[in-house]
Length: 180
Image (cartoon, rainbow, N blue to C red; front, side, top):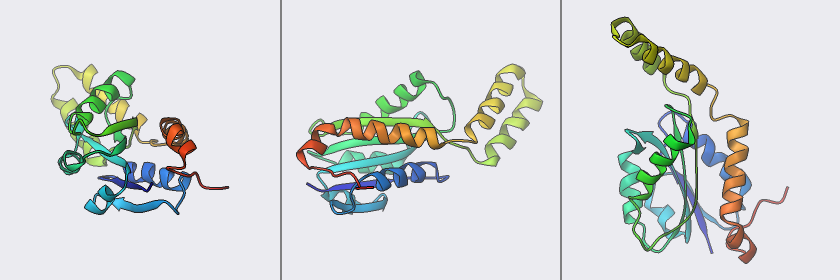
């Protein structure tokens, strides 16, 4: 069986996760790697990456997911805001809701990702006008924490999660790990 890795990445964070998956999985059974493209949907298993927009995946990923039928899907994404598992879980549940019931969700992974400098400028402007400056300071602190992500720890956790989620398929030869 063949697999694809496809993603939508606005700031390069999700693309970095996709690259980590590509390094881990065998090139021989991959039919597609790259930005969202219908070619990816020809695989039996599809790794789909997204960036977070208003608590879910971006519109392009929503449209891609809604077209998938009878596929094994591994979802991975990044979010600039937050870092709590509870927040990531809410995002992932929203993303999953775009998949048809005929699909099998093999696993998922979320981590924090850096945000554009324009976000920091917006937060700083908000701080000067804020009635609740503590909340805005927390947002600025989160911006700075996010600037280091995804980091090597995030990439290793992604690889471990993907390997674990696909352990049955790996044993069956559906996906092969790169020999290193």
